[in-house]
Amino acid sequence: MIEAGREVIRTEARALGLLGEAIGSSFADAVERLAGTSGRVVVSGMGKSGHIGCKIAATLASTGTPAMFVHPGEASHGDLGMITRGDAVLALSNSGETSELRDLTLYTRRFDIPLIAMVGRAKSTLAETADAVLLVPEVGEACPMGLAPTTSTTCMLALGDALAVALLRRRGFTPHDFALFHPGGKLGSQLMRVEELMHKGDDLPLIASGSLLSDAVLEMTGKRLGCVGVVDGDGLLTGIITDGDIRRQMSADLLSRRVEEVMTKDPRRIGPRALAAEAVNEMNLRGPRPITVLFVVEDGRPIGALHLHDCLRAGIA
Image (tube, rainbow, N blue to C red; front, side, top):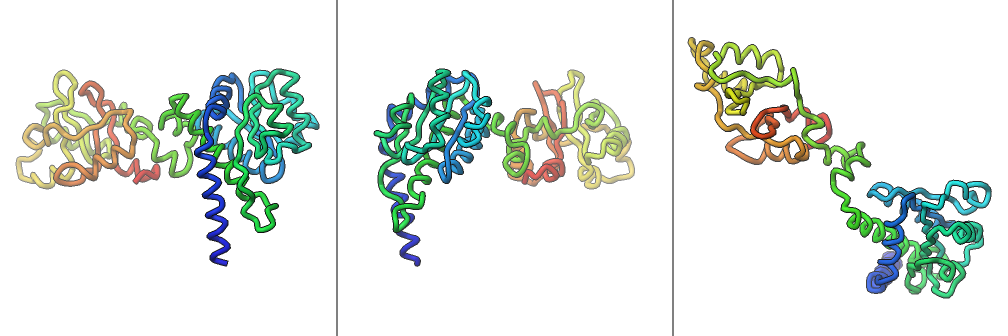
């Protein structure tokens, strides 16, 4: 059984190698046609090809190419109305002769909708009908009977990923764009920006340089971030005082001293557009000891503050 499993992997790996070598002008043509559409990419296929098509549609949609899956059987019973002239169709069929795709392919020809075929046979009805053809190498299925879709569906899945990533690069899709489509789960949290989590406005603990430490303690206590930022006459951040600083400086005259005597000068800071994950790294990895708060600045002026606990609650760590 172990050898049987290894043979399947070897067969599919060989097919993927051939697929990679075969990618050329037809692939580039397909990418350009999909990128040029003003609507959505409509993916369709029957059976196992259909299951792969669902995954391809989901990957396209999550990486900046609007897409959806339409079942070819449902398409023949009214769902063709979902497809408009601004769309493009990606049809999957290893044989290229899937009868259920016939109405869909005829519809694309009638309304001049771009049709990209992902097939295993160049001389097939679907391939000869399509505007662009993505060929799956004829290596044979990994199934000992050569019947169950295995190698062919693996290649289709890889081709779908290749299309999605090529389109992603062509569109200049960024990590921030990715975050917009993945607000939930670990992926979304890792792509959140500092400005989405920071405390701002009246929640921002700030005090003017020259102030008494007693006033700084009141500001710190009221804002509940365990620190207060010190700003000069131009509103520039010049220092930070934490509750730890106050404990370390405890003396009878402490509260009557000026903030400049206790503050840490030129504190660590971060910009609002930075990833929150970068802020966590800044807190943990730089300087003589970890810190729990970063002031968020623009042009040297504090506009927010980010606490480590805010990041932990958002799942960033």
